[in-house]
Length: 136
Length: 237
Length: 260
Image (cartoon, rainbow over all chains, first blue to last red; front, side, top):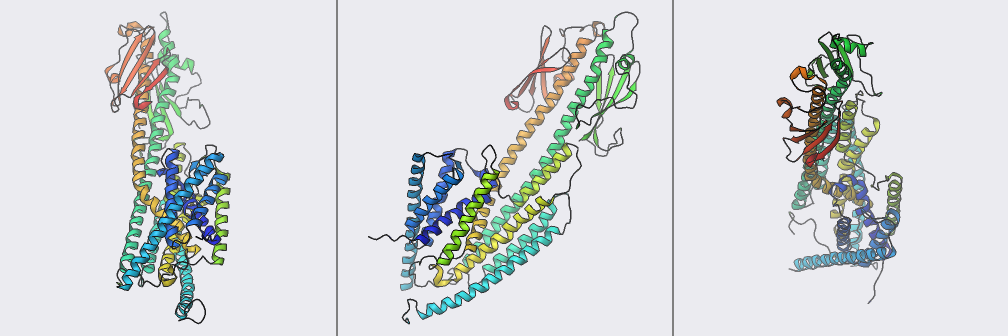
């Protein structure tokens, strides 16, 4: 089994996490903080859910070709948040311990992989439906 | 059919066509952006220099709404499907409605907060007026009733003995800070009573047309009467 | 193909190619610039409490801020200042962003994507402009829809809190009146009314002070000390207790219930 890893898709996936989560968070911070739950764990769950949805979209729109790249991009994005902003989305982490970083990365990686895989599967399903419709 | 390249002619030619269309669309988009910017800008400055941002915002918002409506109708014209067109228009209308409700709500809230600030100032002003007046009258009242013997000063005399520099019609209150603009005006002093009129030039009174003692309009004003039996007061505004 | 429901005739879906080289470089550059800009802003403007600085507000929030600023100016007796150029600029920019710039890029991007028939799956994302348009438009849409019920609930809470504060302030004013009345009772000689003179023993609250529009009041005289207890008419369990000193000053304040 060969796994092709596209650097271009990695860059695009990383960029999409930045543009679709980090940038809107800062653009509309004033509103987002109004709907934010109080507990840090809930903020983390919300952030992870958002990343899952982005992964779903990327998996679908990339025609199931960028599952690994999306996963790697999400890990790079998470590291950017932790190192540069000392946060995971809006949840403050401070100077995170190595174990926290590894745990978070594994969680993010797993969720995003699942999301982009599902997105890809949804795309392939829609292709089959259209091919079936065409053949009839 | 191919010519040896990976892409069939048909697709290649379609690519050329698409490229041209994209470039034209980009130019069209720039024109739309410029038109929208001009429209919103003109509507915003139509109201000139105003004390509030609501009027210019309303004008610019209406212009922005008109622009958005025409934009959505333009971008969803055929060959976009009927279903997608109306879903897009519906979502845009829903969002615009939410924006209008949010806008109106925010305006109501901010105006309520401004009103509340002024009401709080009035309540505080009333409390400060009472406190300042009783501070002035406490000692004379105490001294008057503490007198022993047959020869006693009247209430007015006791008051003037303590506030010898006070003149009728003048402000006898000493400001506690730079921002303290309270005035306690000695309106009348006689043997039986002392009348003080307290004016807060900042706090809003009940009646905006009430003529205050210093000629202002609509400010908080109370009148205090100190007699031998005690203090009474009237809230004049 | 149904023209009412289908946008385009499905072409052979061969699967996607990689994003173009030029696009990838441009996208990487713009992403790095975005991260650096946000990081610079974040670190420059973060307050000691660790709150993330506000980067963008809707135009009506800026206008509301101006309204409240005017209220504060009136509160402190200052004349109203005309609106400064910066809030004007911010309002205009924010309105331009959410009604013109974002939606134009977004809707043109959607149309471009739909019209690119067989290229739908060949290149995605289609362009940076469509991404930027989506980044501005979609979060704006979601937060606008969510903000309406949330802000309404917050306003209801604020009004309730303010009503409680009002009640508290009026009761404090009443307590000051009672404190002065006790002071007068202490100071006036016994001959004036048959009671009083010196300590507060024998003092009784007059009816117009025992019950007012805002509260009910009771006093407890212990030797020379007088304690006043007030209970709000509107908010059950909300009480204020204070002691009256010799000179009619109030001390030992205690606030319970909603007044705490």
